[in-house]
Amino acid sequence: MNMIVTGGCGFIGSNFVRYWLGLHADARVVVYDKLTYAGRRENLRDLWDDARLSLVIGDIGDQALVRRTCQEHSIQLIVNFAAETHVDQSILGPLVFTDTNVRGTHVLLEVARELGLRLHHISTDEVYGHIPDGHQSVETDPLAPRSPYAASKAAADQLVQAYAITYGLPVTITRGANNVGPYQYPEKAVPLFSTNVLLGEPIPVYGDGLQMRDYAHVFDHCAGIEAVLLRGEIGEVYNVGTGREMTNLEMVDIVLNTLGADPGLVRHVTDRPGHDRRYSMNVDKLRSLGWAPQYDPRQAVAEAARWYAANAWWWEPIRSGEFRGYYDRQYADRLSGGPP
Ligand code: NAD
Ligand code: DAU
Image 1 (tube, rainbow, N blue to C red):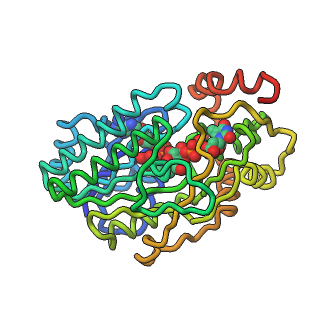
Image 2: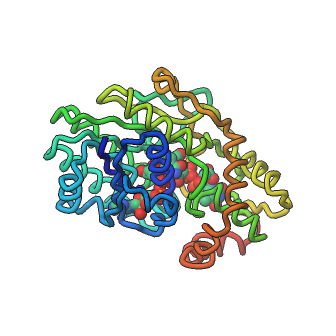
């Protein structure tokens, strides 16, 4: 199958490309990526010599380039990972989230409609909003996003579903939980906390740290997407996670224990505005396709922390370079003040 993987130089996209090429000898993959700060060629550095893989640098909002790329490579399937993805960045500068996540996805849908392609869209559990104790989101639940990032992802989901209904476009959607694993940009909590520990810097825990997340291994997410691509029902949505949550303080404990670090590094800092307290998804629908998560969330976090300990070549240039400006903007006041 010839596929275009948008956002394939990012965290989950690059893991997916490696996963897919590893299992499908006859695969042809075109990575289409704008190479924002989060998109990094080195995430696929072991694969660029593989004749089955090519890279086109471009914006998913550029309809002519997306169309030409799909035509030139005889693409049959678009898998859309491309997005602005960090909630804190969406609070600091929200408009680019609408440009890429909403308009960009819309452009991909238009190209899919023009050329008769299948589109698989990567969504998130954040579209369901904060989930009260005792409930796990199912795919038919109403969307109730609460951050600019989550709202842009929910809008994209709804466009994808509208194209299925209005034009009969063959689409599928997966909604992923919090992924952890190799090559995650260190703005996200697990790589940020791991690399802070390795640098001897404090760990900024927002608020009381009792927010709940399902920390799922990115390999399980890739396997879930594969199951939907191969066996999923066209027009359907599938949740992908472990179905088990932990508090952020528990996640921090795992990072500290795995890296043998001093718990005194933890600082409770001013909370994220509108911080969703709990995400939790039921993943039975995906299990019915024969998929099951291979990693327990505790193992997933520990394994991710170990990856950062072993791969300073990847994160040190990021942490000592462009990331510094964002880090200061996001954390300098938080870390210099007293308790929140
Ligand atoms: P990421 O930020 O690591 O990577 C995003 C990629 O998209 C980068 O390579 C970037 O260069 C590219 N990109 C951004 N804007 C683009 C544009 N306009 N045109 C082309 N490429 C563009 O993100 P990630 O964590 O790998 O997330 C991938 C997808 O999975 C996103 O759609 C995200 O919403 C979703 N998701 C992420 C998680 C998670 O925990 N990280 C969980 C569930 C769903
Ligand atoms: O749930 C899926 C989502 O997971 C994806 O759609 C997003 O793209 C991805 O960024 C992630 O969103 P979160 O906001 O949940 O992840 P993040 O890693 O930013 O934060 C995880 C938890 O840790 C969250 O409760 C906020 C908290 N946190 C985060 C940071 C960066 C802190 O306490 N301190 C921090 O410095």
